[in-house]
Every structure is written in structure tokens, then in C-alpha cells.
Length: 153
Image 1 (cartoon, rainbow, N blue to C red):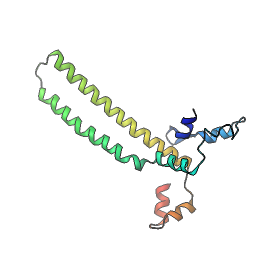
Image 2 (cartoon, rainbow, N blue to C red):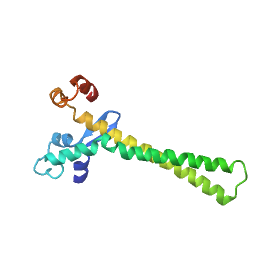
Image 3 (cartoon, rainbow, N blue to C red):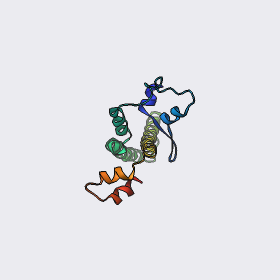
Image 4 (cartoon, one colour):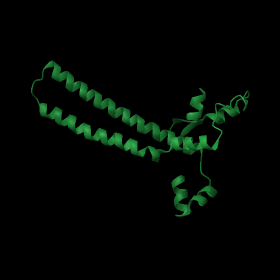
């Protein structure tokens, strides 16, 4: 339970709703900061690693490689099924083709779920940790603060 709270303190629920676990714990009547020290991230390093784990831009490369892999293998499977055409297949051939189609569809569903969960986690993190105007103006050294403000909101 403690590892879950440290690794995923913000949990997406539905849409833009989220559960901020440390905030919920602190509101409990029997909450003791000393007893919950191992449950909540405290150091700056822990918070920075959490911010990095929720960063969707950092995960974009791995998600993109999943999509490329899938979009390369799907046409190959479709060509294989088309090459067999309307000829009558034996039981083993038919079973192998059905198994390949099933595994391909299942893999696509897993990839879509992975992308959806990463985006949901990112939205939940951003909703739980909004960036203020002062911090945005500070970070807008190279660009305009209005453009960065629009992106953050």
C-alpha cells in the first residue's frame, strides 16, 4: 500500500476527475504525519521523479513505437488472410489464422489501453498540480507567457 501511494499519488478516475491520495489521507481524522511518513513522497527528488513518471511527452517515444509496430504487423496479417482468399482451409490453417487475428486484435486493445491510461494519468496529474501564473511567467523566458499559459490551461 505504501509503495502504491508513493508511486501513484494521483489516480485518474473518470474524465478529468482524479483522486489525490495524499490529500485524502491528510483529511482523515486519524491521520498522523509521523505514521504516514513512508506512504507519502517527501523529498524534492521523489517529487521530481513522480513528475517525470507522469510526463506524457517522455512516454511518447515508447507509445509511438507500439503504434508503429502494430500498424506494420496489421497489414501483413491482412495480406496473409487475403492471400488465402476464398479457398477452403484445413482445420489447422483455419485455427492458426483465427488465432493470429485474435492475438492481433488483443494486442491492439492492449496498446489502446496503454495509451489511454498514460493520458488519463497525465491529465489527472495536471489537474492535481496546476501551474500558477508566476511560475508560467518565469518559464516563458524564450516564448510569450500568453502562449505558455494557453498550453498549460
